[in-house]
Every structure is written in C-alpha cells, then in structure tokens.
Length: 98
Image 1 (cartoon, one colour):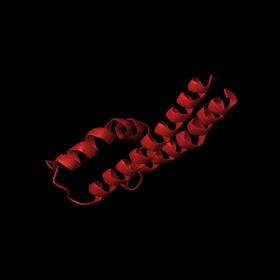
Image 2: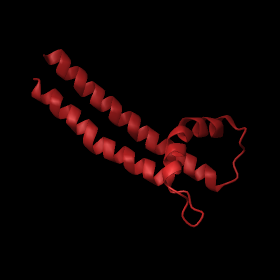
Image 3: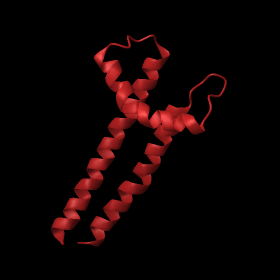
Image 4: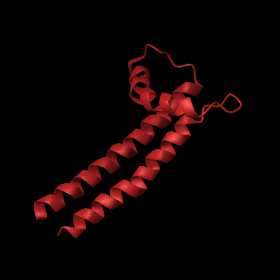
C-alpha cells in the first residue's frame, strides 16, 4: 500500500507543478498579446500553440468585454481551482492509504 500511496502523492505534486508552470505560460501569452511580438518567433509560436486550444474554448462562451479578452483570466482561475481541489484530494487519498 505504501507504493500506491507514494505514487499518488508524487502524481499530486507533479500535477501541482505542471499547473503552476502553465499559469506562467498563460501569463506570458497574455503579455505578448499586449505588445507587437513577432509571430514567427519560436517562443511566441510555442506559447500560442500551447495555450490557444484552451483559450479558444473559453472564448466561445465568453465574449470580449469592451474589447478586452478575459479568457486568460478565466483559464488561470480554472487552474487555481484545480490546484485547490484536485491536488489536495489526491494527497488526502494518498495519506488515507498509508
């Protein structure tokens, strides 16, 4: 049982780190959208490719308000919710298996 418990704890920590990094990626994407960044720059293209699938889904349901795209903020709030709900839940399950 310790192996399963440790595995779940490691998965919870990994998910937390990945979600934290993705928040910073979304923030970087929002910042580059405010400046006229070169769309052929590999870093810009990477940021767009990794964030656009989720941001475009949010934009379908959330119209721009006064010309401001709020989809990055909604995505970050969703990620924070996952960090606050999913990660502690996995940690509690792992601790209960010990």
